[in-house]
Image 1: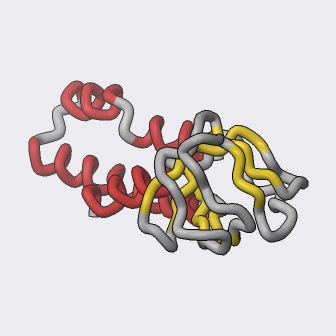
Image 2 (image 1 turned 180 degrees about the horizontal axis):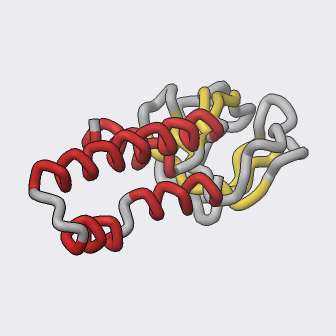
Length: 142
């Protein structure tokens, strides 16, 4: 993913605009160049979002504001990484950020849960926190 983001940064580098002015391009040419760069950036961002894994897991214990730990109903998959957000879909509330837990049945967050769950079978959506930002950026550029 880092390579794609580096390419995206290069696409819209300020040097492009300065180069265009030095080569005598008019405003229409600069606008066209900016639109083309934005389209390339959208394609790269969509590829990044496609590669970001997220999913839903079921809790076996009730999330509590008194603890950063949540016992899960099954072993936590390897794609659950530190820094991913934990959202209680059953309660519609953000719980926190993953600290560890992949390969075990205990999801450990970086701090105590931000919200109490609704019971022992809450569905938790765990995802890369950049997905929402990238989707917003794609929408704004489109």
